Length: 336
Image 1 (cartoon, rainbow, N blue to C red):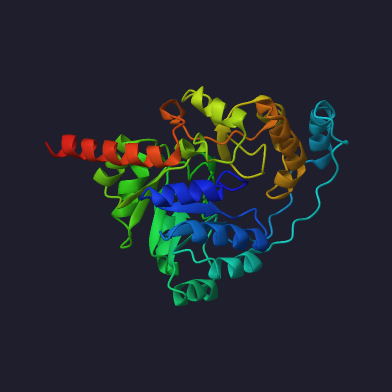
Image 2: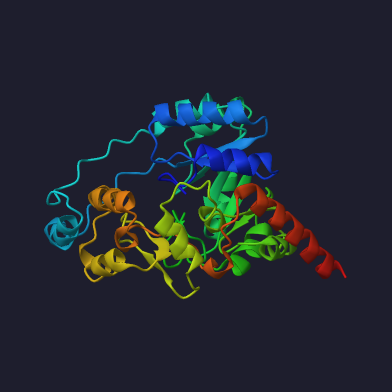
């Protein structure tokens, strides 16, 4: 949920309500991570998490920049932007971001897109942080366990936004939550966190019945008033249907699930020209930023999982309470 969705208001509200709020810091500079964490600490004594992207190896260049510029040129014109230009290379700041995490006061550090260097894992453990990695296959879960994580997120293909796949082909890593979770549970000795398509207490209870110790929910919190996505993004989720999301590389260069819109369709028609991550992400960012300022859903990255019909738009504290009550009721039904 990087890119502004997880505001400090949302993190505080979720943690205060008894769940674990998480600050998505992948696109934040270290100073912003530090500032947000300081505000969270000042407003709640409860635990919270910080999430980053794992450090990625240099991606092999792919795609066709000229064709992508041609696709985006009319979009920029419609949004009143200068013509698109070649994206500026992004300098990795993971080590600097990590320094901010060390001083954040967060109890949990989670990451996606890979594993962590041995030194980094040792530094996190030395600070007493609970470390969580994301897997989309059993082999990835085993690799994370061997690297020393305290828990593994088993991310099913129903999940919104980016896939955490790192050790196999993305299509091969597209395994549904119900199939993935029990296989990971049977294969690792650390706690398993189920993620992907879980929107209410029935989904949490199902995850627990499959052997997970925890459920991780994202899309359902995007419609909370505390979430930082544009109003049109929230409305697209509230109006969405389960067959309206698609996994695409259009916005960032990495496969991610979102609600289909005009920009996704335009770029996907030139799918072989899409650049690698993070160049594609940098290339499309001006259009997406301008669309957010105009609250125009046609050109936003409308990240969402497949459970969109279950979205409710409640304040975060009310949503956490409702999910807790629904989980307890579903567990009673199961046990009876």
